[in-house]
Length: 165
Length: 114
Image 1 (cartoon, helix red, strand yellow):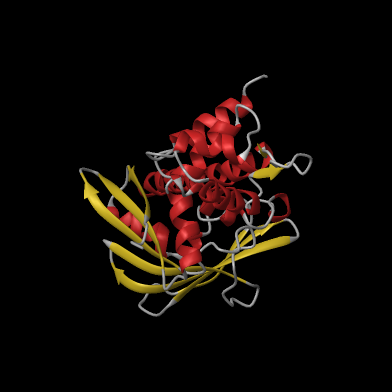
Image 2: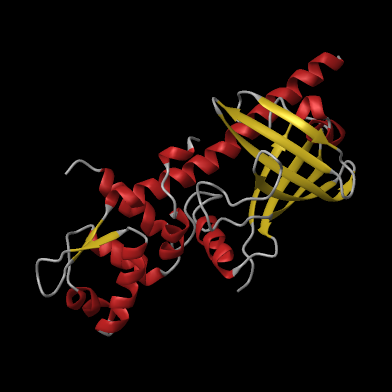
């Protein structure tokens, strides 16, 4: 099965060097990466083999993410292996979706665009089982630009279910 | 995103939705319940083939089979589909909100520099 990728592109009104900084400086990362509430960056070493250990606090519970840097090419490209972990930074299944890929290869690129930066984020399952690939592919087809081709029918079904009967 | 608000196995829902025939079966079931025979007809599919699809949908919690009749009609479990949609929209909005925060931080940093 061809690996599915999920990607997002967005333009920011800032130079690549500045966008690079908000991704790679510990005191800056915590200000946007979390869910908007308390986050703690336990570690962030943006070098090949280095780790970014990120805790997102949601009341009494926390979600932990571990990123391992595979490529670090300032200010153009970051490649990381991204996983959900337990409190000791051991990789675990995503609590909400057991077959969600345990490890996603995440590529972030920063391209100068006039005075700004075109940033692309891309995720692809890494060394994933067939079940993980299938779960990711099916979800991906429905994310991104909204409902993908062939999945419009889901939007129709949902609309029909939401309509007053 | 509160983990307790989402049941396990949403990935089974997405895997079930990955097949176009199963999506079409769900669309048909929005109009009301149907038997295996009624579902097979428009697809020109054999009943065993349809039954296989129904098993996948049932395991994912997207349909329920009525035990009352010999034909065991299938009916759509709307809540389950809506749960999956909510998760997807949550994931998409999650990144949308995150990148909005990143954007605001970048603008603040630029102002600090001038």
